[in-house]
Image (cartoon, rainbow, N blue to C red; front, side):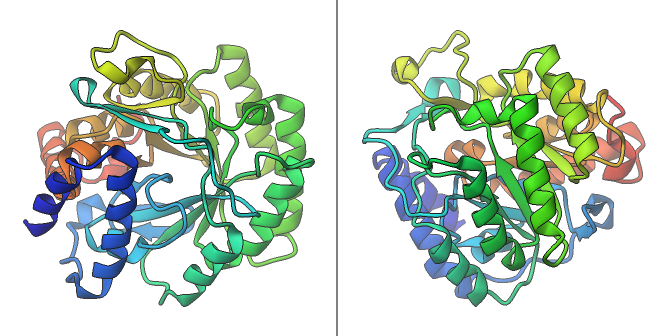
Length: 345
């Protein structure tokens, strides 16, 4: 496949240059890519008020400025999440800030919410034909005096243009941001966003949390989310933990994603499924690079899954392979659909 060859060529570039070139290329190719063939009905998922053609989504971080959501949908993703977007444009942290760990099939990033701001993202979302399910991930500017106000601004500007909104309070690369996961701050943040939603058209709200949380923090988040009325939780963001790693870049600071994140993020997912009501959707993220791994997240309680780092190493053909392998897992275990397998691990 031409796109797989292009992906291999991109890996010869430094990590951030390769990422930037890939997003630009996909944006240019969007009108030329063929549409997806019909999906196998067994992969369909009803969640968040939508009919997802399949449960495999693209995680935030790949397409920060909403340059290529339609191209990524044409690769076979069931949904795409753009961002993280902040109210004002932001350069992010000094380079280098993105590091491949090939021996670990992992990536470390300390990007720092680099993006062109909510108005640029809004203009691109406005120009779409609105086919497929596209979410937007919002954050706060590093220098903001009122971070909750930043989330309110981002929600008001971008929610009308997306299918759902993810509230990112779990990036480790903006100092102090993870403090918004604390019970009092999170209660205030979600209350402000729910009030804002009440003044606009309904859009599902999801909360993206860190994997580096203890049982008390999970209890507090579960209680706060259930009381708030939001629709879902994305589990999880990157980790600041450092398991035994083999690659040369393992000492770099930032958030770790990819294979080493799979087990801890799946453990947190399973724990959270036992803490929140069944009407709250959980989206499993972290270390997925095969259908078996996506299936394990689903059996742990995920209604939907997302990936990003897996594409770095496996290329765009990964999406089709995961869907094929998911169907094989359903057949093996006698489930009629993805929905039947959720939480059955």
